[in-house]
Length: 225
Image (cartoon, rainbow, N blue to C red; front, side):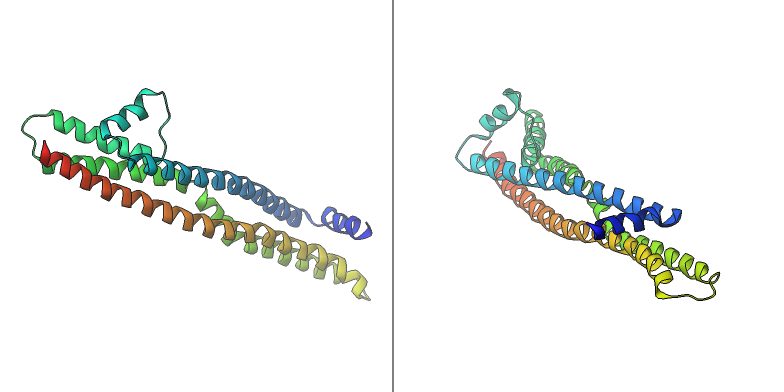
């Protein structure tokens, strides 16, 4: 209990600059954890949607039937579903146009899917730069607060004729708290950023593999018609 009270007292008795640094780091930590939980849920949902859609796509269902199912039931397509819809819609438009070669039909679908893929990855990439920024800058912000606090402590010691450890310790302790808070904000952000980036890369690879497989199917279908 005494250690908790002394810790709080050190924060309350710190200089304004050090307190501002601590507040800034705590706010960054809270925002980071908010984004971490949100992004974890979003990526997990995107992976689940991809698995479910691929299972249905390769179940032998007709492409037209799958397209109608995604558009007629009032569903909100997500992730891989949007990529499929973009490609199939582009292919259908070109197919209804007379005099269009099979190659042009497939290329149109491929371009549409590339655009849809880019948009989906941009959505999934949101918030990750913030985690990277917090992870890379928080230790330095905390170090700034520490340096400022120690500097003020030594300035105060200059006004004391007989300086002892009792005079130095509180100022240094309150300054080091800023570094500790900086690490507390940075470490989870770095771990989450690396983990989410790895998941996003795997998901992007899965999307691209599906696109390649879908293009093969469209090529076969275009040459049959």
